[in-house]
Length: 227
Image 1 (tube, rainbow, N blue to C red):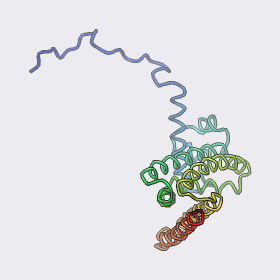
Image 2: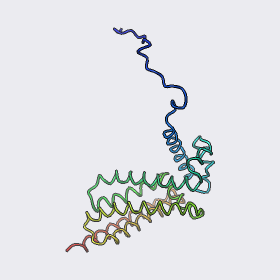
Image 3: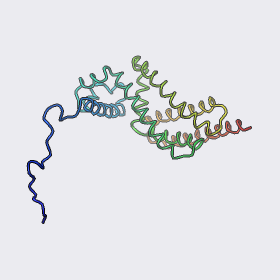
């Protein structure tokens, strides 16, 4: 039982959105929704078929949009995958930074960065990064775009790692950066190996072996910098 009448008067009824284009959101909002659908579909296509099989038509079908809608946003297949790589790298970096900020600055955070990267490269999104990079070998337009994307992202990571090397009191940032790059490249290589041997227990063991060597080397750089 209630003290109020359950029947709302016309004045109490909230106005309905006007019919037409404004009821479906702004053009920018619809464009962003389409972009998200296309990116998720592209990742799935890359994971299943590799770059060669992940055509704009295949992506459009999986995303449930027209191929024209894909091409209107991205222009070419190379544009689509260059923008996708930018988005994935930025997203993966933010995931990584969110995780490593829970560790003390310096060596613990650098090693956590490597550990988290290894776990990320077991996921479809990171596999998609590899597929795009491998696909650029046969696509000059994509290769040219990825060169620009790679250089800008490497600069960001170099700055972030530099802060951790400072916290470690490493004197030679270049050598520390090379050690990190070597480990990072091994993670990517092991991820490619995982594509071939999905169930190999040796992959984690190989990662742990190289991880221990990298940590030992970084510690030696800290000792070398000590007065």
